[in-house]
Amino acid sequence: MTDHVLDTSGLRCPMPLLKTKLQLNAMQPGEMLEVIATDPGSAQDIPSFLKHTSHSLEKSEESEGMYRFLIRCGESR
Image (cartoon, rainbow, N blue to C red; front, side, top):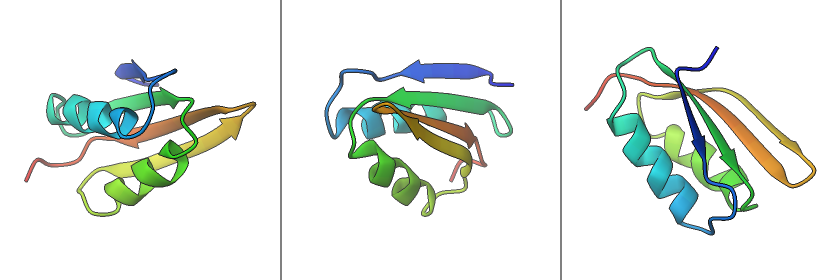
């Protein structure tokens, strides 16, 4: 179950990543964010960013040019 959904469909790099960062900053620890993207760069950018944060990537999938990420918000730094 997700607490927030961020649809970045149609946006090109770096906007999906920037909007994901902003949304996570506005969330409480433990909340879940689903990000939907169509930019292929998101498949690398978002997981790479999350490795350097307290947020965790719970699930990612790609289907027919749509990328979905399920992210658990971590503690703010």
